[in-house]
Length: 210
Image (cartoon, rainbow, N blue to C red; front, side, top):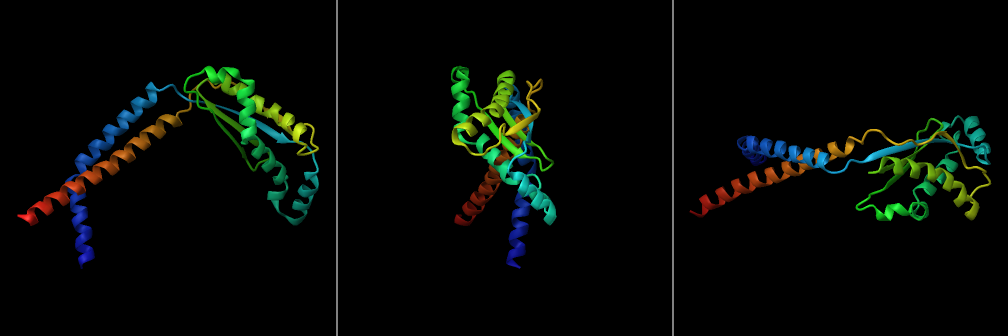
């Protein structure tokens, strides 16, 4: 019974203050939207690559023989390429090759690579300069062979074949605005709820003291 009373007690607090909570959420979401517009947008460039024939062909054939599709794309080779792309070495080579990055204030570079599970790998670069971002994405592909030659990771020459090279994005990534709106709204919700319950608790505590 006490558990049910407690639930209804907190529900009534929320019900009593829902307009204030909703107002703060909408207000925070609006400011999140404004900050997303004012701040320089982020652009995304992607390139699609294919694995070349390698010693992984044996693994691929063996996977097809066993009926295991996850082995048929030479998953070990794909994982190797993804690890190289996301490595600190790749990032250091990018900054060494693109000296202008150090002269751009507050430039944030995000580098991703993932397997589509449909026979291709995607290299994705995000940043605030669309032309520069696409050049970095294409550089990553070329630099794979440079790193491979130095470290002798695999006999593949070249490691990959380019299916779709990266091109400069013409539109900013809309996700950064949605992300700011969502973060602002969630933060405002928790602050508003905390304030409502804190005010109610303080009111109850002062009435008891009297």
